[in-house]
Length: 339
Ligand code: GCU
Image 1 (tube, helix red, strand yellow):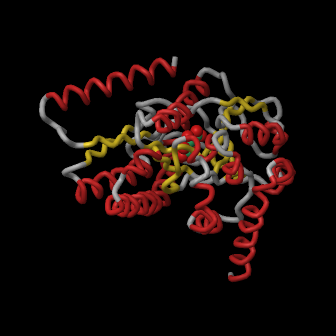
Image 2 (cartoon, helix red, strand yellow; image 1 turned 90 degrees about the horizontal axis):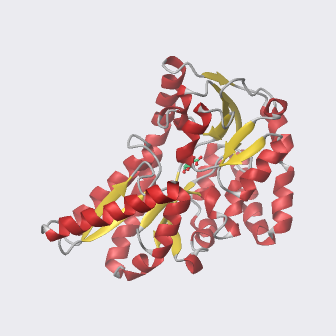
Image 3 (cartoon, helix red, strand yellow; image 1 turned 45 degrees about the horizontal axis):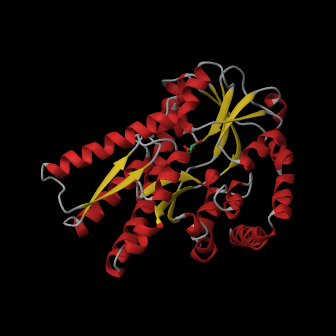
């Protein structure tokens, strides 16, 4: 059904483009389509709007940037495929789902990989470390051009709070569509239920799942807090979102244009991250006051213990991750010592 919906959206989109072009509007301009799955008030959309404005101010005679929020063009899995083929030019994808294109992305899906948001940001901003990861999917027709903050992921549930990992037993918890996340949930002791982000609200409402895990904005921007009333800060993952671009499109830009696009990519990250902190603060207040969500602060170490074996398991299965993992640990240690 989802596939049919996104296919129909795509047909509609192409028809609109044809009509607009026939009317003379947008003529001669190359439309750049960017898809994401967040609402319009989400920091990611705000960052992308800044990109649209920037590119059009510099190259507006040639490019018309169009942003499609809210899974309008399909789920992340669908839109990564659309970016691969060049049906669209860019898509925001969670790092979680990119591991099926190159297993190097497994690294950022590891639970409790980072010591703090500062550690996470420092690693993601480390060009040397990130470059080989971002270019790893060239063979699949796309590359990553920048990353976006997606906060810290925590459990939230409909009927009963999660205070210890034992509380997860027997609960169906939605996870992102990635083998690492399914394995992580197994280790936590819950029943992993993978599905696309856009399906989570209804699944919570209809009792198909007992809970999910995400940052605080899922409660408000995606309205999950209308149904799930317990949010537990067990802090298991900081999984970045990644903006990917069709490689043919990127390689087709002139060196001057590419420079401008690169500036634009940096701008997205900057604006998105600036908006992030304030959005999370507001989301917490809104969820607590207006949606009656209870925030819970459990003992994190009990959760950590359950899933830490996953680090060695993944490193054994994918040895190329070891130098990246070691470097991430080194950066963390250095940051702790500098405090
Ligand atoms: C976050 C993240 C999205 C992701 C979603 C999910 O909202 O920013 O990229 O799709 O989690 O859990 O699927």
